[in-house]
Amino acid sequence: MFRNFLLGLVTVLAFCLGLWGQGKGKQTAAALPEGPSKALVEKACTTCHALNLITGARHDAAEWKLLMERMVANGVSCFVEVGPSGNLTAFGAAGGAKNLSTQQFYIGINDAFGSDPNGLAFNSNAFTLYNKWASLSSQPKRQAVVRGQALFNNLPIPITGVAGLNDALGERVHNGTCTTCHDSPNVGNHSFPVPLNIGTTAYPGVAALDISGLPIYTVQCNDGSPAIQVTDIGRAMKSGNCADIGKVKGPILRGLAGRAPYFHNGAAATLNDVVEFYDQRFNLNLSARQKSDLVAFLQTL
Picture 1: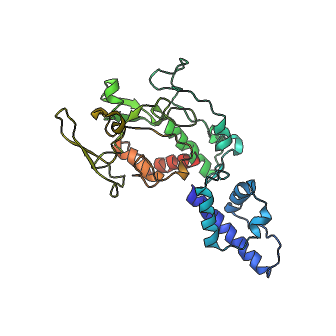
Picture 2: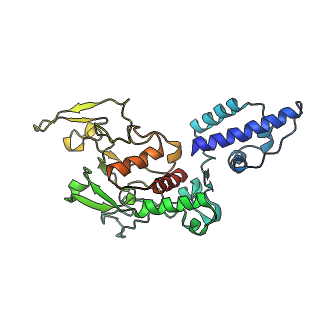
Picture 3: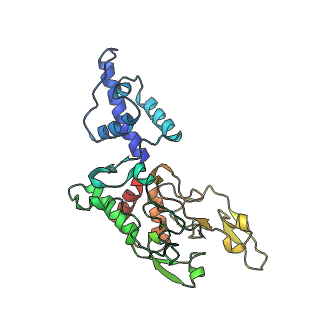
């Protein structure tokens, strides 16, 4: 999302520079050109700056790009409510940082295995941010987000071979969804700090992951079992237990678009790679549209 967002900002800002130049040096503010990126600049930049400061600046496209990248790197957050699907609070949607700040959370909330301390039953529909967009049939980008949210909540996933889950439950296959682990409502955090090994640290790795630049650790346990090779030792570095090799805690999902690369070892360069990993790892057989819809939803978080 941020890459596309920055490109849109740079395009509009460079255009404004051209209009300023046509004014032969006069310090008059140029109007923003019409187009999809106009709303991005008006929504994001004017949160902190007057529009005439933007249109009157003497920067070329490369300088605007560098400036935008520095602002993001320094933690500027006034971009977060605008994405490829537009304003994340439009038409009654509940995206963006302000709504996130009011979201309820407590340890164990919406736990998928019956351990919510308030005794509440698990609800796989952990994300409801964009329910109000379901009726916007004439807006394809927002419809993609709605479909992606529904997939994230309810796409059946046959969870197998996940250390910390299948073995703990004594189930070879646990039928779940994305929200089985990313259960915190509208946040996507795992509400209990349970480290799991879903295969992101394995060596050799799943084809969707690029582990070519990662170190490979060979771990020999003292129980006589075969040596294990991983790209991240995970919780075992702290616990010293062989059962914890490769286990990591699932992260909060909000702000994903600005936090590439993904997974604890950075093996997924893009959100497309993340979705591809899950598709391959759990044999989901996702269609091209399902993958695209999931990415569209994840980009809004």
